[in-house]
Length: 320
Image 1 (tube, rainbow, N blue to C red):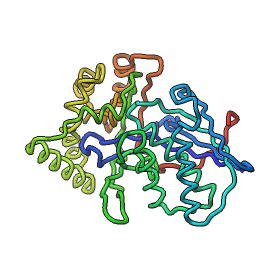
Image 2: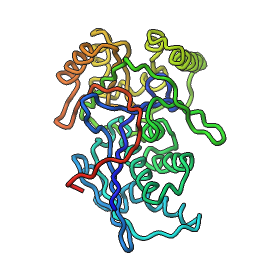
Image 3: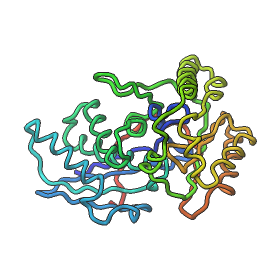
């Protein structure tokens, strides 16, 4: 039996919540914006391969693929529990661009570990699996942060709480909001984006960050979308990262001038997002980004809602 799992793209930070807030994305036209992993059993060994439009951006050596590491790490967990296993054939469908700010590595990790857990009859609990996802994604990004893997795995808008036995909690979101996302086609390394971040932040900035995040969470629970949009501002990362993303500053300004409720960087960029509660406005924003923000044939844009499902099993395709 072959198991195929889809894991959606995600926005880390969501402007207001640097490293502690993330949302999963679902294009309204039904496009699968994310990565897929298919798993089937072999008599022995570990056969990992990659297909898809962005497969050529990954190492050619399968042992350097994060999905390979996921399988090794998961099987080590099985061994520690005294659970035997055979070999595996794993195929990663790389549908997300690398270094896009859409949780590309997180989507691969989540899809792989979710599929592995399905294959082995959910040997790991949801919490155990999420911890493992954070550890494996951290190998790519340079440190363990859950603001991409948590929404990609669980769906919705997730706030990281980092308490014993609990990594995150889902917060209410606004069903009327459209999230317009545009990947320009430029590539930004998450590790490099972290490297340029300041190690010290002024107290005034920290206080504003805390106030904005607390206000956003409160407004989300109260259903006050105007207030939530008003404080959807990044005072930590965007002032540093925005300057190194080609065209971002002008594109964001255009989004606001065209009537977006808020706009910012998805993750570490270069993907830009803009929020509106009007579909016609979302289409206008997307058209502008298509014309003025995309810089290569690999660039794309989507009008999205938040993906409330997270990772899930998908039908098999002929290419796998």
